[in-house]
Image 1 (cartoon, rainbow, N blue to C red):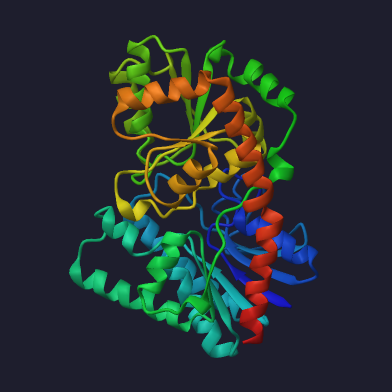
Image 2 (image 1 turned 60 degrees about the vertical axis):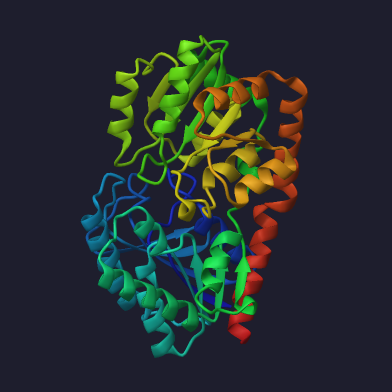
Length: 407
């Protein structure tokens, strides 16, 4: 099967972004399929030298066509919109140069549907659409999009895209519900959440211990709680500052580390300085590649996944949660939704709330209760190898593409 795969933000383990498309495409190639990836240089910068316009590289058997379009998490909304539209135009022309048996397009952004829809009409080829976030629901909930006409047009385009797609992959049950609300039948929707790369993250504990000694010596004998992700409007990393402040007041033996980039990072740094926790019990570091993240998560006693108190955010399928599971490092989140449900059901971590004193108390007890903590580690291993195994979910992913191809 020949697959034309559209993803604006394709990343490899050497990148500091999510690698779902790389891992799925690599496994499709291993199964004997041909994959043509059409993407940008956004998360491949620093790994390869790019010339202006289109570049072509073979990455682990994936034929990757890369449009040089630099990206920064610090880009403002208008700049992002420009890049979304620009890529939808150039990727349409590039995609039409390739004949596939099926086209796969993954959001965000929703504009990735433009080349997919045109490809389907011109080439008479089925297409599968992957919903990573419910657009435009999330930017509307954030207040980024508030023009009534723009909202109406985007909602119509979203509904049209879902109807035109031959199959839809949703990254969570909540996202699947959002798709169904657009009058899409269950038969057309498959839920395939983010997955666990156990071969990458399940490493000997000595790697984490050595990483802590060489890169995180400031932790000392304290418990290490890590947030590794984007500092964006959705992520609410200031939550970590609030926890750190209470912990400092109580002289708690916990050290917090936040690592990543984003347009809200400086605000978090400034708040941490103001509260007197920066470089005390909260250290804010630069992002690292996923291959290096394995050592950090191995060193951590707990990983955090944070989002704001908006229901539209709770349907996310955060990479950091599944990376932590694969590393067998317990997880804490600060929100409700489907991730809250499986964390509480499995015992792989805990769910915090906006009562910072209470949340810190629960966090501290969890980290120092050997039985509860060891049970959580075991639950992480079970989930990563059974329920969220990348290999198992990649098989389901391929079956969905075949289903679309065969009609």
